[in-house]
Length: 117
Image 1 (cartoon, rainbow, N blue to C red):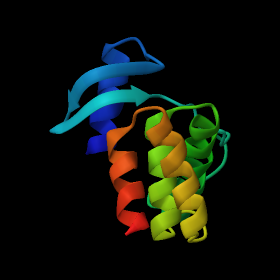
Image 2: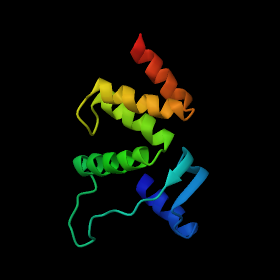
Image 3: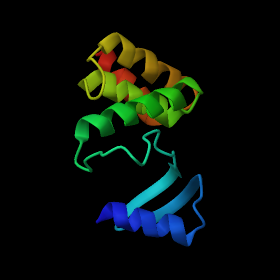
């Protein structure tokens, strides 16, 4: 249902590549980016393929983090902390939290502080 609502939102707003302060199906989005899938439409991909979703998501989060997006850096830190989409690595979690907190990301600083204690 959410995917259909997002699709409708994109069509209604002329397929933006980014948007902000939006609510879609009860989900509040402060900042969003639309990234086209690298999968050819001729490939048969199951919509419930969580492995593909995690792999693709972690790739784009890493790219955004590397480009200096503090939200992505914090998210990548959380992924390393929890071992979601990447191999669990506390040192890399700290690295990404530190990068994000240097850019003023308050939650990343809290995450970093929690790891120091």
